[in-house]
Amino acid sequence: MKLLEGKTALITGASRGIGQAIAQQFAAHGAHVAFTYLASAEKAAALEKELRQQGVKAMGFRSDASSYAEAEKLVDEVLKEFQILDVVVNNAGITRDNLILRMSEQQWDEVLTTNLKSVFNICKQVVRTMMKNRGGSIINVSSVVGLTGNAGQTNYAASKAGMIGFTKSLAKELGSRNIRCNVVAPGFIETDMTAGLNEEVKAQYIKNIPLGRYGSPDDVARVCVFLASDLSAYVSGQVISVCGGLHT
Ligand code: NAP
Image (cartoon, rainbow, N blue to C red):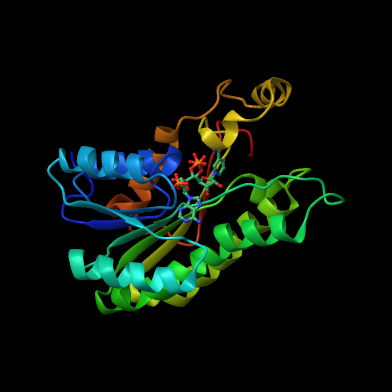
């Protein structure tokens, strides 16, 4: 059964990792997909081609999630091409890990603007059209680190915790317009973002994961399909951890 037939989605940061898997799963479920990337132009072009092979409309846009002006331009262009937006996934994110004593102002600012301000940038632009359509689903990709904290990630944890407060507030503001807002909080997922961690840290993580394995991008994408679809019609303002039981 195709769960997203006829819906149109915008996904930020879909050239790699979790965002790419969300785009692939959405298209496999019949959604038309607009997505963004920053540096990976070739990967974005390949993804666009792959998604179209599913018989849906698909377009990649180079757009820096941290820029308010680029978000404004992006949503304008997406609406011109796709006319409607039913689902938005704020997925683009970065890490700039460091202990607080060594963390620079730049590392703080880059993470906060890319991970948190980006969510404001996009939501601000899409709520008007969703309100007009009297419906929509906004999915913000946070992290279990936003719930638990993590040494060496004060910037990242603050950005991810901020996304949760933002989402819960927006869910309360927009519920009466049938716009649902939820958070997905992945645990340890195997992507480029986690590839650089040293083996000792990885071994420590896996010891604490009750399901005994790292997550895959598809594990997260399938939960996004649920939140984007009408199966979750009465779910809003929630945080769903996708972490193999790491955070309970
Ligand atoms: P990833 O493999 O590093 O991919 C990041 C994606 O975000 C890429 O497509 C990248 O585009 C895009 N991106 C980065 N900065 C951007 C910007 N300023 N504007 C637009 N796009 C930008 O990361 P991932 O592991 O898939 O993570 C995706 C999301 O899940 C992030 O929000 C991350 O914090 C969250 N998360 C990940 C994990 C994990 O274990 N991997 C756990 C919890 C939460 P380019 O390729 O063009 O650079």
